[in-house]
Length: 120
Image (cartoon, rainbow, N blue to C red; front, side):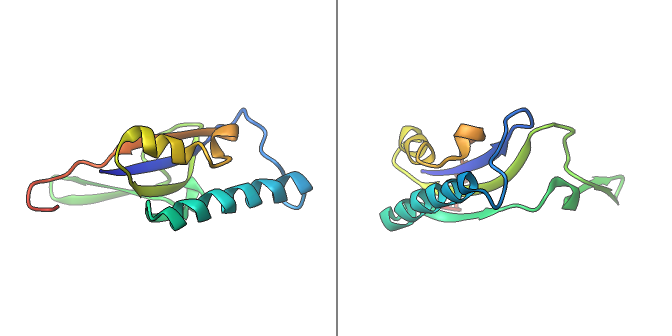
C-alpha cells in the first residue's frame, strides 16, 4: 500500500535557525532517516515544497478558470514537504516517519493513497 506523508510545520513551535549547530544536527538527523528509508526501498518519491505564497489554486466554475494566489486553505500550519512510501501497513509508514525530526517540530499526516481499479 502507498502512503502520502505530509510534513507539517506548526507556527507556535520553535524550529532551529539555519546556520546554528542545532540546525546542522536537525539536517543530519533528517538525512540519516531519509537515507535509511531509501536504502530499505520504501520511498517512492519525496521532496521539499516552496513556501505557500508560491502556490496557485485552480478552480473551474461555469467553464472558466479561476486562479488565486496562495494555498487553497487559510491555515497557520505549513506543509513543508512530502514522502510517498510503499509499506505493508500504515503502522509501518508511521514507524518510518517517526525516524524523521519533523514530528519534533510539527506533525506528519500519513494518509493511504486510494487505489483505483485499472490503475494498479
